[in-house]
Image 1 (tube, rainbow, N blue to C red):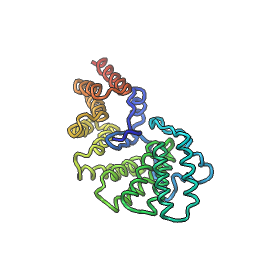
Image 2: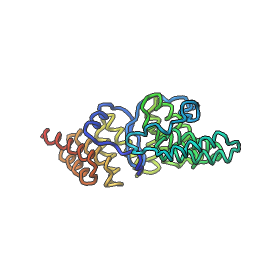
Image 3: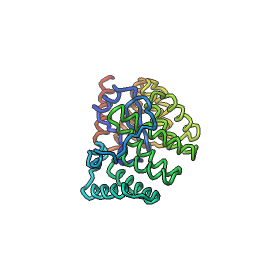
Image 4: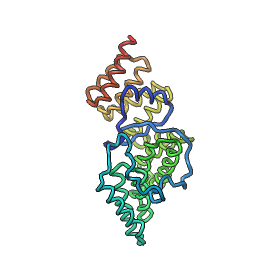
Length: 293
């Protein structure tokens, strides 16, 4: 389970905003989910971010995503600056690839995922292969989920798609890469391609938590609440203490009029997660269900 960034903020206000924004796309990695902007797929040859062009020398000083809880120290910033200078001056391809890998790791550590993706991509050009390509793709995917504008979402999603396609050419059975690529398509002008990919993941692995979760939330977004209930029940059969899955099962049950079962789901959410935001949102839904009786 990704601990850096994908915890869905379950405050009642945020949930209300998210539900009002439907249909959007749920981005899910390691059994967690988050909304991202909808938009058409950008040209895959368009660079999403080149941290070396003028004006980006201080990129590491920019604020990290709000839920990343990462702030670069002066020592980290100096280390990155030194590595960038060495990278820019290095002529040997193998040595440059090694420096790119180091830079990717440093940027990932401070939640600068677009820069991390850029440098891991430079490393993959020197040492191509499934693992190096996915390393770059995963960082672009992280940046895609944080994109603040449709333009950025398009560009970063396209970069991730292109790299995941290369990963899958190396290994068509890489379900994690296929799931993440699916979610970038769902946020594009061809969402059905993403849904088809998620179904392919479940055909290969019926217990895949990420695919079950995303298909469940997408069912909620399209008002197919009975189908959502089925998806989340399947998910909880695999992972009984999946907080987000339990929460959204409660939402789907409430929408289908199964108030007693929905209450049980929200009460279980309160048992398995002690995060204040989660508790507050579960309480909010319980209050709404009680007042509706």
